[in-house]
Length: 142
Image (cartoon, rainbow, N blue to C red; front, side):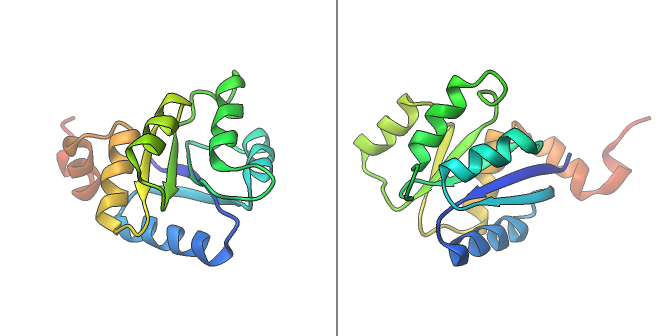
């Protein structure tokens, strides 16, 4: 299955890096969407089919945690997983993220393998499903 992924970060170069790392990870992406802050992300979420949100924490206008809180209050958005990508990895901060509805987090800097593991876990893909995608139709039994 191909996933539509929304990347939320106020830094254009960081959005490009995240996109490149996700592509390098081998995750099956349908489309990438981008937003410069939480408010912009909400606009995208209300107009596009998004399967997963990758959001920075520190952004002007509306930070990543505020975005997740608003998503969780919206019946149409609360089921979309949100992964926080941040330099802040203290135990207290991570506990705050999780308590407020963040699905998972990735600490900067990150590798394609870390991204792949988190995305596969959050999207509920198993090794069997990954093998099936990697091997074409050979893994399917008809």
